[in-house]
Length: 340
Ligand SMILES: Nc1nc2c(ncn2[C@@H]2O[C@H](COP(=O)(O)OP(=O)(O)OP(=O)(O)O)[C@@H](O)[C@H]2O)c(=O)[nH]1
Ligand SMILES: [Mg+2]
View 1 (cartoon, rainbow, N blue to C red):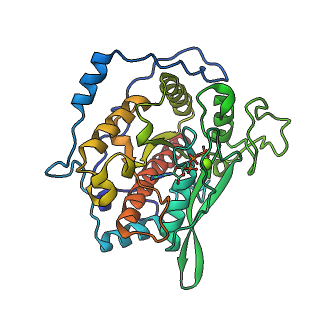
View 2: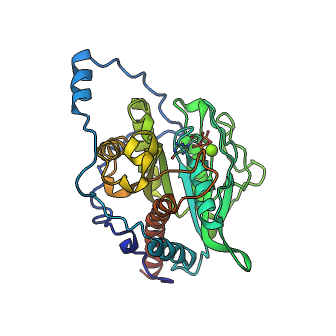
């Protein structure tokens, strides 16, 4: 599949027409900072009762997206990701930036994908629990496949960064996000909201090459926090999406913690696309991010497990393939722009 657009056939679901269903983003005045989160207004009791009544539990008779959870398909997905190569001469690897609120599961996703390819649960990117971002530095992790002849690097690099805070001074700023995406941030850069990345910053990459830039952004949001993310987080996502789109970088989203919103899914991850609760949460995530659900995939990261699970691996691999599909679009756009 080298140099071919990735297909999601192996995952068994289609994402609909690319770029056609994104909720339009209102262009607003741009500043280097995010708006400070507005305090969520207390909802009227009647509305709260109505929304509780609207919650539908249980499993759908048939899944709304079909995923083949067989071992054969898992192997096919592993091979597909392992053999991925960008269809563009100027970059040999796909650099994907994980972006999302503090504690959403960005580092856990990197560690989980690493676990899939190493065959055992590892804490590759350090995971933590903190009200401010546990991850403070920019770190790039090349996903390596563990085999008989040692670890072989794949062409996938997942980049971890500080989480987005509720207010501008508690997390990654818009200025720094864009500097990372453009490739200016040096590896290991420690983010500090009051010290924006600039030309004078030690290690600042003045003229980043195509290989140093970010080729796709994966937003990461926590399914259990969907009702508690404040209105300001929605504005932050809209602003980010507007500016990231201006850079020509495609965006997808990962909905983590799905095991904690639905017991049926926690018991058996293959129920994920039959769960009404997960489906409803995906729709809330789509509204929060201002993107169609076709861009969003659910994942369950390894958190307390000691051993990998084949079905959890398959869902994680589907998420990786989803990301690579949009990485490939970036490289295609790059090639076409050069030809024109
Ligand atoms: N049950 C469950 N727990 C998860 C999942 N993903 C992450 N966690 C847990 O959520 C907590 C935060 O995860 P992290 O990966 O550190 O989150 P992060 O987005 O990197 O957070 P910051 O670096 O602080 O911005 C940890 O306790 C994880 O074990 C998931 O899918 N399911
Ligand atoms: Mg982290």
